[in-house]
Image (cartoon, rainbow, N blue to C red; front, side, top):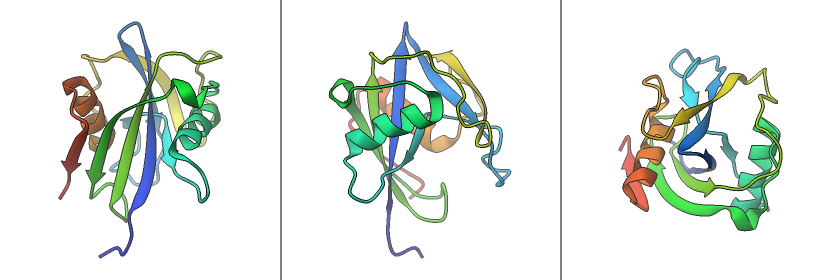
Length: 144
């Protein structure tokens, strides 16, 4: 069993009732080709807000003022990688730039989906976070 937990940040870029998702490239066939939110791991010495803004810029090229990020859900997840993780989900309604796939080696494409019309082939971890966000639930557990 893993002796630590990772901390992930997930960004819900929300525009006109839609959310931006990325279709991941992954060597693990369980995750390859499935949809996910722009996200990533917290780096040492980095705040979660700075991490969320950084990941959005690296993955989809948008610039977010950390003050515009609103924490909407926390998920304690197991079974979505080698180690359990805490996932912090942030909604953002304002950003600069038009989202694009800036990491084609990690992502096949990015696309907007209606918040209530998400693709069936989403990875369970971000899907649970979006479901918690839509339900107004601040905390959830998945995979334990």
